[in-house]
Amino acid sequence: MMTEVESAHETHGSFVSKPTGHPLPPPDHGTPVIALFNSFRQPQNLQPIPAIPPKLGKWDQSAPAQVHTNVFTEVLRKDQQDATKILETPSKDVANNVPNSALTNTNLVPYVILHLAALSGDWDIARNFLQSKPQAVRAKITKGSETALHIAAGAKRTTFVEELVKWMTSNDLELKNDVGNTALHFAAVSGIKRIAEVMVDKNPTLPQIRGIKELTPLHMATLLGHREIVWYLYDKTILMDRDHMGLLVSAITADLYDVALDIIQKNPQIAFAREENGETPLHVMARKPLACYSGSQLGFWQRCKGSLLPHTKAPYGKKLMYMQATQLVKQLWEKILTLNSDSAISDLIRTPSSLLFTAAELGNIDFLIILLRSYPGLIWHVDEQNRSIFHTAVIHRQEKVFNLIYELGGLKELIVSYKDNDNNNMLHLAAKLAPVIRLNDDTGAALKLRRELLWFKEVEKIVQPLYKEMRNSVGKTPQILFTEEHKELLREGEVWMKGTASSCMVVQRSLRLAFIVFAISDAVSLISSAASILSFLSVLTSRYAEGDFLHSLPNRLIVGLATLFISITAMMITFVATVFIVLGSEFHGIKVPIALVAGVPVGFYALLQFPLLADMINHAYISRVSFRPCNHLLH
Image 1 (cartoon, rainbow, N blue to C red):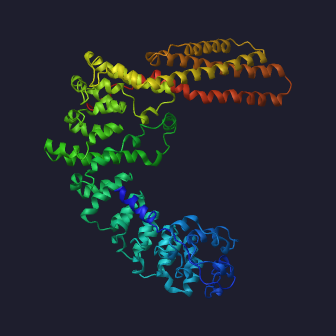
Image 2: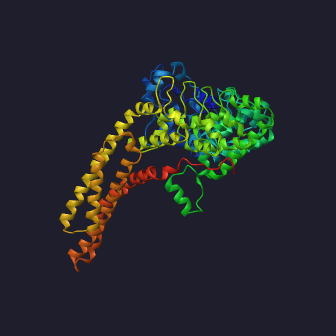
Image 3: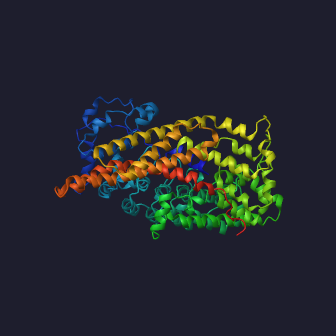
């Protein structure tokens, strides 16, 4: 359904007509436009609108002009600027794209004041204008045939809309622009509930009027995720059968799961319906990783904040969204299971593409668990390449999905024995380079390579010994394939390791110099500094074999970085002590500031390097438990 939005946007610029060139009337007196606009602030100044100043007497009507909306918006911003100067500078875009005939219509000139007032929300000016021209409330004042109500609703001018509607009849509210959108469509796009309430109270039939692409205001608001106005219009709109599927998919896409739940509860048969592209609502949910709402994908500091500040609200109500999303998946799946036919269920979830493998590719573990708990036979499903969801998880490096294989017991060996159409076993798939989006999860080429090695070694543990030397259709074993696929990453990892070690050694030389300058011999700093240098030297002199990136090199770099931090901390403490010793009992007012300021650069460097150390420790030790059973299916 998003194609409808994109098409609507392309056709009509976010459901608002594209501004076009403003025509110029015949030259007359020299009253600036801004003065004309301001004149409507005083009721006693009501008079016919004077023409544009005689400066424009040489204006060639065949030449393109600046888009009128942009022109007068600029006039409002620059209150003292003469409008003639602006109008004498045509826009290049308009000059290239707008036909001359579109720039010579003088019908819109009398409504410039009303247009500006609607954009800025200045009701005083609009009221004075309407008192002299009452018919202007229903006049189409833009090239796209929008009325003042369209403009004010799109500009989110609530008070202006409330007052303007009082001047209009109920039929006036049904006026459409060139693409068929009413002012309520504009209100739906703006997301302001109060504006919609004012219009619907005046004309209750407005929610039924369809606009561009036959979309109702409710559908437009849903596509843009405006929850408050969606719920308001949902109760006011009478939907046809053909509307429910599109509205449900739009609600899911916009994360409005509460709305989606209500739709599926009132229309249970929609669980079997398909979009124009052949997808069911469950296919759409397979592409929405539920873990992103549960908090399990929050960063380290976000989880710490949640632990330390338990009363802190979850961002955007993620916990509630997670509960609603999982409930929606359960309800859709329960209704599909009522088919009571394995072939019917299989056909529904396989076409147009298998939602199981879509979920496995995206790491949508919660979605898969809901399906597998009530229908365990799904683990035997394979795609067109004869790969199971676990093979797909290996290809796309989704460890949470892969970990489900440990809960299969003896069935694990059967799944692992599958070979795809190219005679690749699971270890071959682990030997291939991970997708770029997964490689980018790690910092530095060395850590990327280590992650790849970790996957290869983990899959190697569960495959049959024979599979380790098995050749695929092009005659390559898993190890040969791994070496070929990761050749470039290996080279980049070597460069990254050496660069990191070299830069850290420069810091160590600075620390040694600092010890000499301050003439302090600190055992902890000296020993840790020496240990750090030796660790980095061992990194520089390593042979850089593939296996070294799994344990040896990461451990050496961890030791080097850890001792470097210890050395820096000890040096800071030593320097502070030196300041107090050298200054003695004198200069009490400057000792503490000097010590603090001098320690800032070193402390800042340590703070910047700490994320690298934490990442290395996570890879070397914490990531070892990434592959383990989680008992999702059995409990």
